[in-house]
Structures are given as C-alpha cells and as structure tokens.
Amino acid sequence: GQQLNQSPQSMFIQEGEDVSMNCTSSSIFNTWLWYKQDPGEGPVLLIALYKAGELTSNGRLTAQFGITRKDSFLNISASIPSDVGIYFCAGPRDTGNQFYFGTGTSLTVIP
Amino acid sequence: DTGVSQDPRHKITKRGQNVTFRCDPISEHNRLYWYRQTLGQGPEFLTYFQNEAQLEKSRLLSDRFSAERPKGSFSTLEIQRTEQGDSAMYLCAQDTGELFFGEGSRLTVL
Image (cartoon, rainbow over all chains, first blue to last red; front, side, top):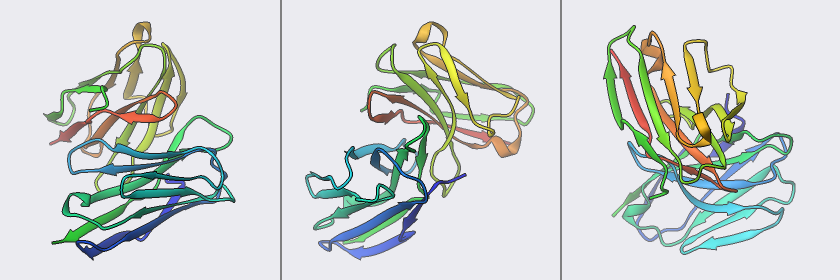
C-alpha cells in the first residue's frame, strides 16, 4: 500500500498563481523525488533531493527536503496551463531499495 | 524522453488470456523496476532487478505474474490467465541514482 501522504489531493488555481503541495511519511526517507504525470503517460522526474534541509530549484519549481527526513514540499511559481497534471512524491525508505509513491496531487490551472 | 522504452503502449485482451510487456532500459547494468498504477493512485511497486537478478517481489505479484531480465538488459513482465482486476498501467523504471520511467503499457482486460 501507499506509504506517503500528499496534500492537497487536488487544486484548482488561476493561471499565474503560485502552488504549494507537500508530502509526509511516517518513515524516514533518504531521498525525495517529485514527478509530474500527464494522462496516459509515465511519470516524469522534476526534482530530486538527497539531503535533509536541501532546497532545490528547477525553473519555476522549488522543492525542499524536510529536516526530519519525513516530509518534502514542492512549490510552483507563476503557474501556466501546461502545469496541469498529477504530481507525485516518491522516495526509498532509509532501510530499503524500494521506491514508494504518494497518492498524488491533481493540479488544474484555469486560464 | 527518458530513454526507457516500453512495448506495447496499449493492450486490450480478454479475461483468461496471457499478456507480455517488454521494457528496454537505457543501460544494462542498473536496477530496473516494475510498477503497477491504477486510476487515481500512485505507482505501486511490483518487483526489481539488479542486472539479471530479481531481488525483491511485492505481495502484489501473484503467481500469475512473472518477470525476467535475461542478461541484465531488457525485461519482460508476463501476466497469465488475466483477470479484470489486472487492468492497469504497467510502468517500467530504471534507477540510475534517480528513478526514470518509461511511458507505460496500459492493459485493459475485458
């Protein structure tokens, strides 16, 4: 089953607004990955985080690895229509090699 | 384009038939994962290979499922005697330090 909780489950925003979503776990993770998935396609990696407290940007996207190693945040600034999709967090637990995925945040951008 | 190729992209089959999916990763010598994703859910781990060795299998992988990675290159996932509950997107991913997915193979069992 799912190991990671994402919130919010869905978001409807106006184009140009900033977006923030987060992911929490009851277990410690040693890596956090953020993906975007379009309908009918595989997830595409957006940002990878490897160190507690790390803040990493990729264009309009910024993600942070929580200090407790049990959470991560993804922010999207100045949203545009092509940001529409489902965003997943993922990572391997500290004790294993298996990557777990969150339940996803569905983003809708209204032009 | 991650370079991870999956075939076929779509498969429609009747219940009870066998299906096979193929994954061609970027590199021969890294970890390769299979995931299953149903509508509205995140990907769920099925199994992974280190080279040709299958090192871990999920409880989701019933005895009707079998995966292989001969010679540590491409991998196949076979589902025997398909059931309607097997309808899902089957995703292959390669771990090169980060997990890169293919485009997926969508299975519909009628």
